[in-house]
Image (tube, rainbow, N blue to C red):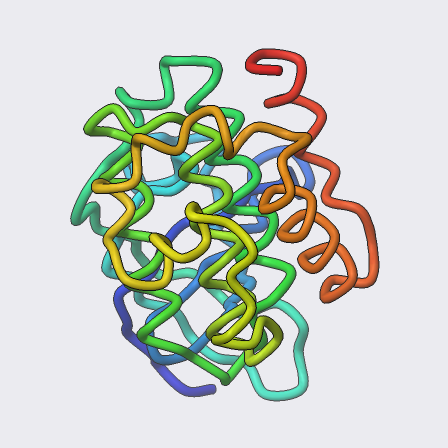
Length: 210
């Protein structure tokens, strides 16, 4: 067993038994980490608000060689985005970001660029960025960072802006970011081809912000 510590985003939690939670993290240097938070459902004192989706934490865990699940020792909140997700549209956008990030990350293969991308998109959403723009920006840079979207492939002003501007500066593309535009269709098609499956969380944002 090997103790580990890293900055991480909380991507997901699932119930395990009567008291425990399986926690999925995106760690800056360790990549995707899945572990058991013992008694997390029975006592909220140990982890507090650190288990909320897309909370940035300092995570400590014990890596158990040969096991799919490690042991989560502690999660200390660095930055919470819980208040921002009181908006159903922003919560739905966060769900898409979490699903894509979880599906494209791998254990032991951290990427600080992806880690910072999650933070930049979360901060822009919190500051009022249109949820569809946030999603498209995350799709664009996920594909770019994984070498899927060629740099020369910019069939729309939106994608050209994404290539050179931070997400907070791209609010003017709210209409183009919605499903149906050329740029949106390209990103949607490419991200699902990269994942080799549909992104299930899209349906929630479509229902709230068509």
